[in-house]
Length: 167
Image (cartoon, rainbow, N blue to C red; front, side, top):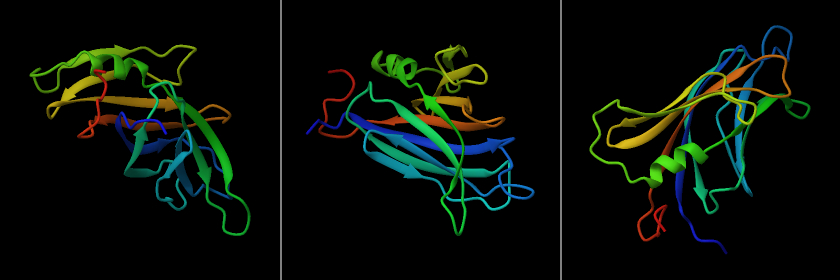
């Protein structure tokens, strides 16, 4: 069994212009998967611009394990409909975590990750020093969907007794 490196908190903030799957709207929820772990937000009824503000956590054992965000429309009698997905690239964030930054001014932007063909970013993604921690804010453009973005925020939690990122 692999050792726990830390916990990645993912705040799923909101969906923007998601695809209409039912008559006039959708009942979206988000699933974030990493390895065998799957965490899910609550379902927001009848809304293509849902606000979740749900925080989910992933136990990280491998920094190279892909993290996938998927949006689904909740259906009562049939399987949930896929509304799009995005890859969450944490490599730039982890790079700055490893630098061991400390005592930066509140709100200081450490780095901005630029959208490119290798990531799902819809716009620049700042890595910011906030409340004594590094957080990264992302707007992810959904793939395999006609339209839609999901806004999230990442925050790393070191776990006591683990060697953490510095090892």
